[in-house]
Image 1: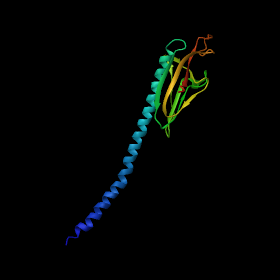
Image 2: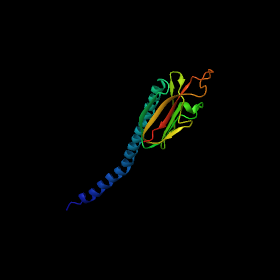
Image 3: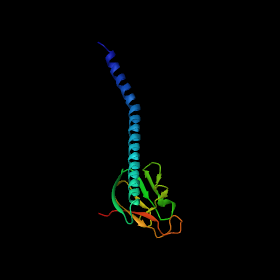
Image 4: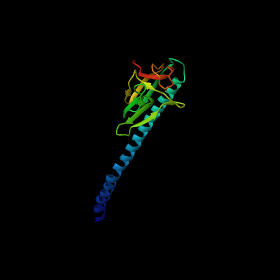
Length: 161
């Protein structure tokens, strides 16, 4: 009777199990990394799209308005748009994925920074799909320091359904 096959089979199964124990976590880590990177890229693309739509509304006349649908991945920790008019945050869109790094982008039209607000405060949203109302409004204060009340800002709100 041949006894090599009896010893050889358990040894082969042990080797296969050992290989799986080491490779499965590595493969899962790579998959998770690329999934997180794809979500981060989707968030950045959504913010960039919103930024371009804000520039389009700002380039139009008084009280120009547009409804924009934007989507952010569900792992989005926050997207903060603008702030109180006249502050440094009013020019920024800040965004962050869960367990990620906070990033920001400055919204400007040529060399002019576009100030954005949600009725005097920062618009704070999380992952999901939103209809945002973007409206160009005349500023009640002098934003660029030229002594004239001819400045504009963007009011941005989540549209109520």
